[in-house]
Image (cartoon, rainbow, N blue to C red; front, side, top):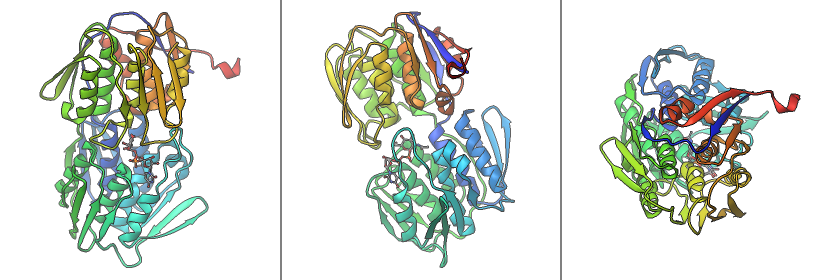
Length: 425
Ligand code: UD1
């Protein structure tokens, strides 16, 4: 099995460029289903989640061709299957993003029900309620959701209980060719939603208001394939900027919009870090002790849950105590017990983590609990005393392209190492 090995204490810093956003690329790939023909996506990250979405599209009958390291050509002319099987949905929950586009184009979709997930139950009830309001009929049997549109799709107002990213996206994609106008109230406002709306409009859709809590979609009769550059990955950027907070040398991250990390950067300034925002880039450097700052995750423009783990790894070394509150997902504090193995003092009480800052990390064998938690452990390893070995790194590969190589480029002593699987010893 492969692990990431980190020699702590080596100075790191410099410049790094991030890829296109995972959470946008996956939905844009699903959106290509909406129009028969060849769509082209550029700035697509070369990560395992994108490979899984490629498999989903191929399973449906699309042709997915890699045209360069970051360019995909997707031909959806011959889609002849409307089903996403469990082995793919189980690998990546975002496979459910094909539900809306399949219903829009073919009036039918079968999607395996997502099973358990390591960051909580992650239900899709809001997707279902919203789609029902548009005229979708659902049947659940044998672990699959079978969706049909007996009378077609008709625009209406859908008010979401919570600004769910996935539900907003599925509803946007289902309604682009519905009769009349659809209004999504309490819509998610993430930059990836805006990116999807832009792509849909490039395909001939009429979507307005993306980025605000009310999105309006005026149904059109036809869509055409389009070409689109994926927005830069604010979470990959935030991960490297969080690392800069632990190191001694500034880190400059290029390829994303600093305003997409608005509150994260504000909180980092309150922690005492120096933040220099530029056009499409940002530099963070440490100026002294890390000050304790409370964090609570919320939908955009609130503090992103996807930056919670990396920020906790930073706060665990603060001078004092603070509280990290997770409001978006249940069970997203698994990182805490791994950080404790490295000497952190973190107590979990429900959806709060009470963090008492310690002087430093001690290198240890730890296990990636999930994608962002895995990155946060590598980050802690960079400043730990001794060697840190992070296992279960397939989580990291889901969302970070060339993570180790990029860290090496910053001067860190990090490598992927093949070790015997402990279970087989
Ligand atoms: C997306 C992102 C993920 C990010 C999250 C929140 C992708 C591939 N993933 O996930 O990285 O952490 O947004 O910014 O884009 N919920 C329900 N019922 C529903 C839908 C959601 O209860 O029908 C709950 C979920 O269980 C979760 C919360 O709402 O607790 C937020 O979910 P949502 O915003 O939908 O996140 P995802 O789209 O799954």
